[in-house]
Length: 263
Image (cartoon, rainbow, N blue to C red; front, side, top):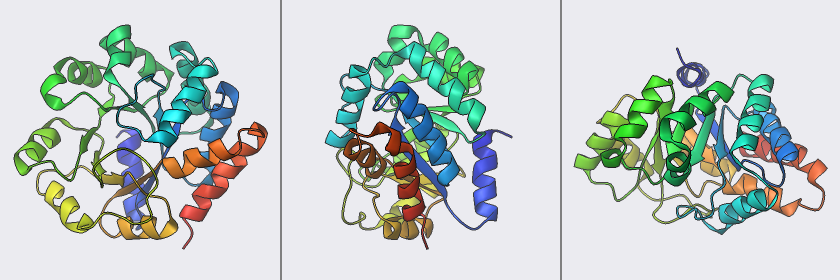
């Protein structure tokens, strides 16, 4: 069994959803980023979603765009990403998922990219702008190197396309609960339970809900309908707020995770 499969099984046995944390690799700098990810794992994150900084992150709102800018300005690159993955993998057995854009894989060579990140400790890829219709090379490389290939489903995705996406997905399904880009929201989307149930008609894969999740109440609500909850901008905002004291960031993001998981 894979780390992802084991994680969802253990969370289900404990009667709770998997908590998926998102931060951008290299934000605010490489060494602090390593400690942030380890702190997230220690604080209760079950799956570590690692954003790979990119110059044109079209699916991301301002919070995550600025995180990518900070990481790139600090010198983040592919070699440093592999260094980060190796360090975090040595410090935790929790799954590592890369949230990235296809240009980064294409420029490096899709199979070479998959082989390298797998060797460094990654468990899966969530390639934002690579739909299943265009993912043949990615799917072959992911399968060869035993990386989960996670696809996104949106509120506007029609049933026929949900069927197509779930046919090619592995690891879990990422349900984007709102139209638009990433970012904190005051309220969750309406009809969340019905939307998740519509996906489950096509797959037995776990469904994780993200985009706009920012409070403990949101996490509790999603726990009633899905196998996982994804929190990103709420954590990235903690990093942004503590840029002048980077040594304080790992503890601060850990505290935020504990707050979101509070009963």
